[in-house]
Image (tube, rainbow, N blue to C red):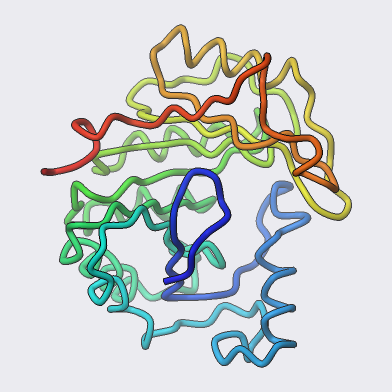
Length: 241
């Protein structure tokens, strides 16, 4: 388990590492930069750098962590990458089901594969399933997510690199919004954020504003209209106990 600086989670777990880019939101991938750094530091899990690599020795780690955690799954990869064997994906879900005292957050851009495999997954109630949507052109991913058997469905509208107008939030339990950070980051306009915030408030979807982003995200902060927005799905709604 690695403690995470990501505002909407507590820890990360990477039973696979590495990925490939499939849409504009991937352009300045933080995981790719971090993988290069970890490889240079001699971290054994990143011998292959950012090439997709299964890490079977990491599979059962959450079962060893006795303190309940909110765990972001595959912060350094995408569980539904086309080259990940279906059996391995199901093994990850099996571990999450057995580690029932944790809350797992899974996020993918490969929403079509997610929907395709959903009938094969015995969906645990402690798994939150999300898709990334960076602009209007990729809102089709929400439709794929909506058709899955996940108990809690969420959106990561990050990095938000273009406006998203009137997104269909039917069946969506949570929305995270954030700007791009780091070298070469693309700006996010306030009106894009307010449009989404107002829709979430109107439709009673918990809204989490992660950051404005930019080269120095600490400097730009995460306040919106003079306050922070840290809403999450309620515990009663999201947890099986």
